[in-house]
Amino acid sequence: MGRKGISEAVIKRLPKYYRQIKMLDDANIERVSSSTLAEILGITASQVRQDFYNFGGFGQQGYGYDVKNLRKEIAAILGLDQEYNMIIVGAGHIGKALAGYKGFVKEGFRIKALFDINVQEKTYNGVPVYPMYNLEDYLKENQIDFAVIATQADSAEDVARELIKNGIKSIWNFAPIDLRVPKDVVVENISMSESLFVLSYRSKNRT
Amino acid sequence: MGRKGISEAVIKRLPKYYRQIKMLDDANIERVSSSTLAEILGITASQVRQDFYNFGGFGQQGYGYDVKNLRKEIAAILGLDQEYNMIIVGAGHIGKALAGYKGFVKEGFRIKALFDINVQEKTYNGVPVYPMYNLEDYLKENQIDFAVIATQADSAEDVARELIKNGIKSIWNFAPIDLRVPKDVVVENISMSESLFVLSYRSKNRT
DNA sequence: TAGATTGTTAATCGATTAACAATC
DNA sequence: TAGATTGTTAATCGATTAACAATC
Image 1 (tube, rainbow over the protein chains, first blue to last red):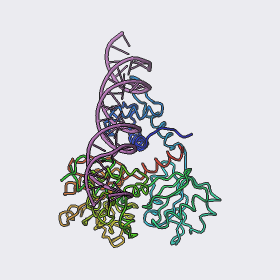
Image 2: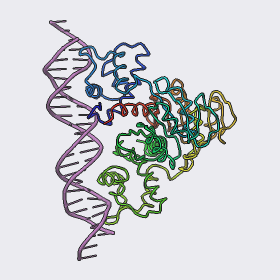
Image 3: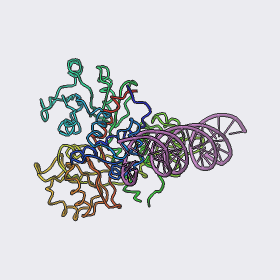
Image 4: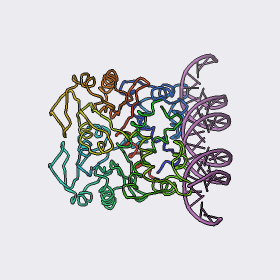
């Protein structure tokens, strides 16, 4: 049940809303208006209302938005109302950093295993590390929702193929390469170097 | 000398152009047309020409773009035609991963030091690790261009203040928080969890 | 009820795409 | 020269903002 017609721009703002609303909720704030939320996020109140309107709107005229409800709604939209099992392919610096990061578990993303060509340790931060040749069997025996590619660029394409062949439909890609995947497979790229280059650009072109 | 009127959308595409053009150059391809580049990047030829036109345009009618020249031009726009000194504050999983990553040095970003409250090792991957209380003196004695914040969210704001107080004008922020900085300070955020949530959304709302 | 604030449509703005003259 | 492809302006499209009726 794909929500059709939600633009990229809106989707990218959803996690930002979620983070701020969670903070309001954690601070025991009960309600918030579109204008307050807009000010926190540095956008317009109109945009906040328009964004929520895309999903039906979950406010109340004359009152604003109930923070707890808003949190629940946006969590559901983002799919954060359930738990997921993840594996990480590539136990280099980035793969290990991800495996060690506690923040993901809090939101329901469980890291079940690391895979690498060279297995240096049996576990890393409590996460088992397996050799690459076990990947196929592992995926057959375990229900895995997301796979993270944290390999070098030159092996990322092969890893993706292997993952997809074994039923993975959602890939979080840290390798600096555009993966070619069938259209039923979702890929979200995160590029450190692109971000660093943008910083470099902005530093050079300060307003 | 700020280039005025370049939109966010264009800026975000620049690193993508750079990566592809570098690949073409490394493959010894001498020239490329806007339509070829567009196809590689999955955008329109019109957009490629329009984007480059923002910076004056560096092609030749009837020929296309000279790859070597294009690489040089875009590198210069992004500020990749010089070297930078960086420090990383926060020697946790992410800080260490960044310190260990070789890719940045290749593009001229040298990681000179790691700082943390708790210094576990004297060096990490050849990068010296210093205690936080040395930060001020270090910044006075060394010419540092960029600082990376790789701490927890709750100390990021304090770290930013300290960095700015000691002359840092460009911050690469990995902490999941919007830093409040004076307007002459540039901040580029990179948010793992935002990216993961977008993946989650797309998985749930497959077209 | 009066005041506040959303939901929702309409207007505006900016980014993308199309078109084609310029020119290599 | 003829063909190719850019630079550049104009047209289109989509996203943001404004406005206000609905309603709590």
